[in-house]
Length: 214
Length: 117
Image 1 (spheres, rainbow over the protein chains, first blue to last red):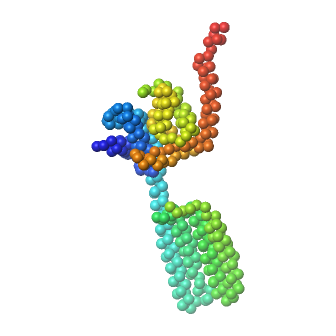
Image 2 (cartoon, chains in turn purple, brown):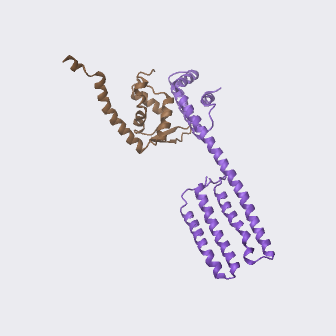
Image 3 (cartoon, chains in turn brown, cyan):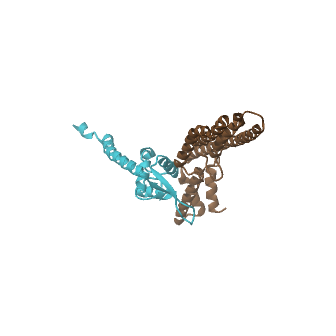
């Protein structure tokens, strides 16, 4: 076994029952590098490989405090992974449900139009598209993908609200237009919702500070 | 080489000692270890474990930062650099020490004159 392997094995053994984390990886690299330099110095003083390695181990001191520190770091990292897989699962559920809602709302609206019902009722079921659209927006944004980190949950909710309110505006416009048969009522009733919804959306876009790309 | 100063005496000053070395330039673990021995003229050896624990704490407190060197031969070194806050902390600790040093000296060795009176 050569010295490189022995040093690596010695450091690995020190932390062998510690959960993996970036911090642990870095600390081990740091310890290995410094141990090699120390061994080199001892060799210059005329020590053999074995003697130098033994001396280097002695001067390391009591690493139990660091091991505890690293164990803590490993636990935190594991918690983070559980958390992110949890949010991704919730987001997957959200996408499935919202797509179902949208398809349901869409098909119901079409079939209502072939049914003999009063005009305002024809667009009524498309409210499901509005709800589905909002949930879909949230689920897509609060999801961690291979290339992007998940958006902060509060921001994702605000985006979902912006989309929801805008869609609701369209819904209200179509429904009231059908109910009264007047285009001006259709537009005026949807205006307030569209203004609020799009306003929210634009202000969210402009206040985007965090780059979520990995 | 053996530890010639009692560890209890020096423990509270580990941070200041490291900051003193880093304020004179960026450095890495083993080099800092050697500098401490050199500065103490072989009277004191700070164990590596203590050193790395201190690095972690100093980093958490924002008194130092770290970066990887670009050595190609052998492993890469992790360098430490003192921050503005670190420099302030060093100044403060130094002043406290200079003040305490004289008082402690009086407390531990003083009193002979009044006794003889």
